[in-house]
Image 1: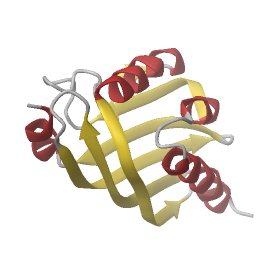
Image 2 (image 1 turned 90 degrees about the vertical axis):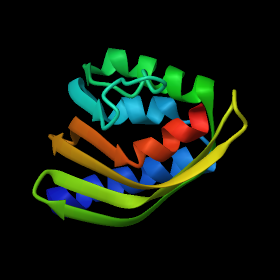
Image 3 (image 1 turned 90 degrees about the horizontal axis):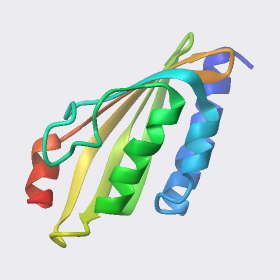
Image 4 (image 1 turned 30 degrees about the horizontal axis):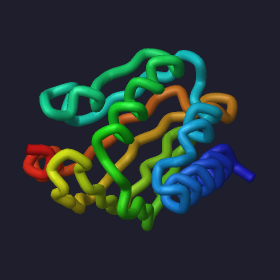
Length: 138
């Protein structure tokens, strides 16, 4: 199996569990992350999505997941397509969440970029409709 195929297999399992547990599989995300992972998000920490910012290192990722799951309840997380080239993988799909404070739901296209090294994720960046998410959070 090529590195790209192996990395896609890792992500398919991680995303499957993330969807099935509705966000209850944080430890699985952390287990595939290199200790020095670079993790970023398109809102870059802008209010009201302060948790969706840049993190250097696996230990900081708990802040991301704690913030996400404190404010949002997952409806679904669906990845429809994986594109791998070497150690890079793009995962494309959609996700929907309900804001726990406002009760508003939002669905957005979702693209996650991953880079792996020796079977561990060393880079992640997520892209989604942050404007729609802000509307649901306010």
